[in-house]
Length: 465
Image 1: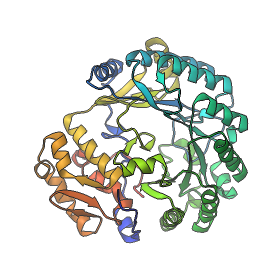
Image 2: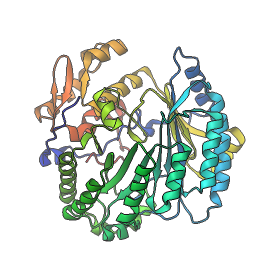
Image 3: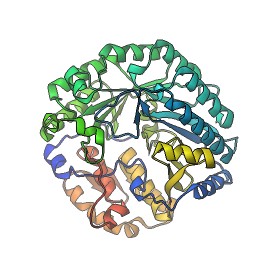
């Protein structure tokens, strides 16, 4: 189990605070190519069925609709009040569910299922029931509440009966978007959401027996200060969710049009953002939450914390996750999957997605087949970002390499981080120290062949802090 102690060294953070991947995959989506399509995806799916021990499945559904726009949002979304748009989309999604279900052996259990967005609770109760029924008809879902079935919800779109419906549908985990409780911050980002709305839904979820409840916060939003965020933390800690995510707002208006609605003059200065981050870490850890990594905190008895203690934590496109052994099937517009030795992404424009799902059953428009070096580096990066340590002998055994030879350049590049007190480096392994845990992305970047090999313009990633 990694150390829970953190050292918040502002000078080190400023020096290392550069753009870098979040490593929800390796290779990252920047490396996906248009040469990978439906046929390649089907080939990888077939290979997973014929393996000696086919992996269980994880299903991710992307529901892109939102009734209102949150100015900070960088998700693939469609802002509309017209509920009729969901009818055509669900028809196409049903076709994809049918085709995807036919690609995978029926004996393979769906251990994880997640509805993300957008706002999945934009769907009306009949539509949610129909989508879950259709999924159950084509995939082998758990009927005993043993699977990890989760949904992202906007508390403004859910009432008590809808929470009860979600539980009857089989969901047993909820993620609630909050971001900030301060009225002036909410006004500045166009997300007006009362504290009572959120707490009422959290209480209803507990009454209905949801096994895990997560709350998302964002620091770096307009008009935030250390004191204002402290007030939000008071309320969140008092509510006692099982998990809390504290995400760094990345202001990239040149890439995300909705962010142009934010007045840059109202954004907190970099030193204020650091104060807010330090406050959040201190308050959440003092309240008994474990720092899982990057922006995730969990109670000691939560599945994320347990998976980390048992060495089973992994990363996927939803962040830190359990069940890293699953093949992930992405369903819906822009959804990303990880099947066998491949990553793939569906069409990002809804019209193209619907056309291809209707005519072909699948809508893969780009992806990548992993080379042996990709699989090796993915394992190294996943171990570091999830567990803050690396056993060289295990890597050598798993991949039949000599670590000191294969990663000679990387070991040399790590020496500066060792001198700065971010990590310990010995002949048998690497251990991330308390000062390095907040900068884990920097350490992982050393092992990213695509970053070190590239030249010229770098892809735009968020800042590591």
